Image (cartoon, rainbow over all chains, first blue to last red):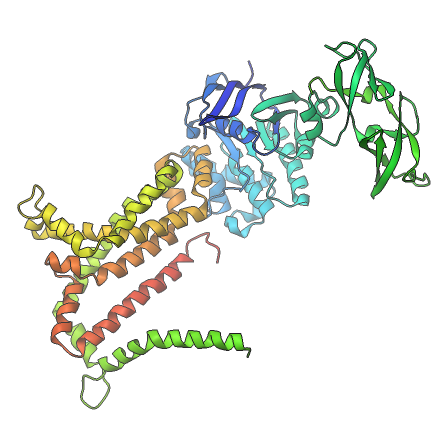
Length: 353
Length: 260
């Protein structure tokens, strides 16, 4: 049995269903990320796990116990908020020790644990400060320490990095991941930032309009998106509309060109419409190895440091090619007709439109 | 100096004269008790009077009791309305505004009718009962000020997120209110408290019609029978009000963890 089980969760506010038939098993020690745009229901699911919202239908089980209707303060679930939510009237030490004090732990134990947590978040010298005397990054680390101090069954992170600037965000997400690995605490992380999700998660749950679009490892989600939504939300993708020619051979016709996928196309017959997705970095200028070739006209290009992004047209369809900025190799000129090569393995055939 | 800035200074100066001239004149008059020279005789007479001390003490005790009751009533109400019953916010706000809309004379006649000696709960029948009735009347008068001050403070600290953070740490409602919310809205509660104090200390209508020995009726009595003492008392009352407002600023910024 999974450590955390969300079974057919549904949440409605009035007539609007914000979460629909959400089912997900999470293993002990796993780091699962809910990824999706604003309003997709990811935070609502998190809040239901925390106990701040009650599901309209379905059940939530933690370690086999049904907690669907258990009050938030009885769930032993630690939570880190986007706005830090540190208690302004308490010092860092008292913030971190709050949960242990509530649990009635002896003063010596609280003090020991607070010191341990301050070491863990690398802020041992700031215990006597008040939250407003700390930077945003420091406040969020204290908030993390506060959530972890009482040894929660599950750690919930509600967009904890959104309010921080870019550099701190990258450093803190790596810190969160390494802490989580070290402590082995089951973690649910909510974000709308695909880079964050891809870099820290064991599994990603991509959500859209209250429902799960796809669950998979970061590599699965990035390389094998199942729906157009996942393909367009995670990373940059070029989409082409095509028709299946020979499903067994993976052959699809794009305009006048036939390309091949590495595997047979499931649940399709000749003549069916399918969307083909190609990552910009999987495309090369020139036929190259791999088998597939498209003829395109270069429209524009931009230098992004180590990468050159070429904008091209395949018929009427614009698309992008990302190539490394290799010294000595001149990029094609705008207006030039070039052959674009890509491997069969890079052809993503989306199941659903 | 530009023309615009000159205009602004003129407006400020005009406003200052409008407020300060009567105050200065009253103060000047209060010093004239001794013929031919300035003195604090009027103040000495006032402070030496037993009636002043007794009525002031009575009103102070009543104001403190009012503050305790109104805070105990408003803080949990405003907190739970903001947190769990936001739809009731409009209704509660309307109710708290009523004492500003209904004249004090109407309210006090209502009280006398409801709690008079021939009613089911004859509070006016005993001295203690009448004191309690006066205090509860003042609680009504303090409601709009206390509710607004507390609600604004709750809004400023994002009470919902702090409550959820404390809940996820295992805390129950009472502990959250006492240990997390109250210390962080202290400046709001104190603002409400000082405003309530300033209102109660000089209140006349309730105290007079309920026949209580409060500071307001004392001021009125002196005003009707003496010349210089009322001016001295007006200055004292003004100083008390300003001291209250000054304290709001002072303690508002002095809570632990508050940004300075």
